[in-house]
Amino acid sequence: MTTIAFVGLGNMGLPMAKNLLAAGFSVTGFDLSAEARAAFTEAGGRATDMLADAVVGADAVITMLPNGAIVRDVYQGEGGVFAHMKDGALLIDSSTIDVETSRTVAAAAEAQGAAMVDAPVSGGVSGAAAGTLAFMVGGTAEAYARAEPVLAPMAGKIVHAGAAGGGQAAKACNNMLLAISMIGVSEAFNLGRSLGLDDQTFFDIAANASGQCWSLTSYCPVPGPVPSAPSNNGYKPGFAAALMLKDLRLAASAIQDTGTNAPLGTHAAQLYQSMVDAGLGDTDFSGIINFLAEKADDAL
Image 1 (spheres, rainbow, N blue to C red):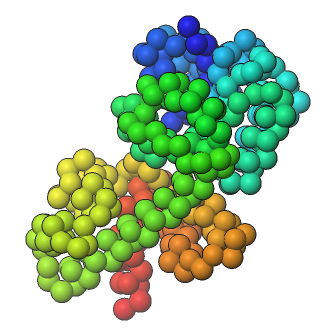
Image 2 (cartoon, rainbow, N blue to C red):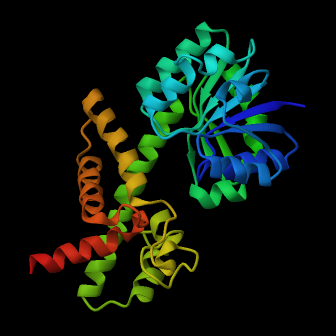
């Protein structure tokens, strides 16, 4: 039986680790939060408050952490993963971080004799719970082949995005596109309302016309047309605006580093920054529709 150390039992990590348990893996979870550890123990897993205890002897180590600095520390810091992993361990980082950090840690892992992939996800907390996450995986073909069966119980889709850092690159580009499309859909609904168009009528037209996109038909920002969308639940996330801003900051950094001309991505980051600054960071990112409408009202 493959033994797994799961590091980071937060909103995403906990349901992901539970799905690995349900698939028959032996999983030891580590988190600084006693509440998170207790929840994992209640689900039938083994939890520990010592990173070394989770990692020693594990065939695979999966991390789901808040940012690149923490990822570097967990892997490369004194007493971190590299210090305690077994020879030839498989390392999977599902955190959403910058490409450069991901590549640096992967290179260090290779120097330690471990196989590592970056495997950020799309699908949010609901996808984590349902085991339908989309994994974008960067790493060698050999490391990807080893990672795929471990990721499968948590996934609806797994795509090899190329060499180390490729998963993070795909995640940054995808979420930049998502933010831009959600802003566009929101502006279209707001304009339609100003022109007297009924929301459902506009949805029925646009959903079957050239304006069709995921932000419209699967995650519609107005209440009514898509019952499962956060707009029908008071814009509770979902995917919080603060998390979207985090991803847009990563994209903005990559835009600057590469000299890419991406004015819409840059402006999307500015709009979500304003939304978070207004105290709406815990609102679903589709709530940008209301933020934009309120800004227009303020301008009148």
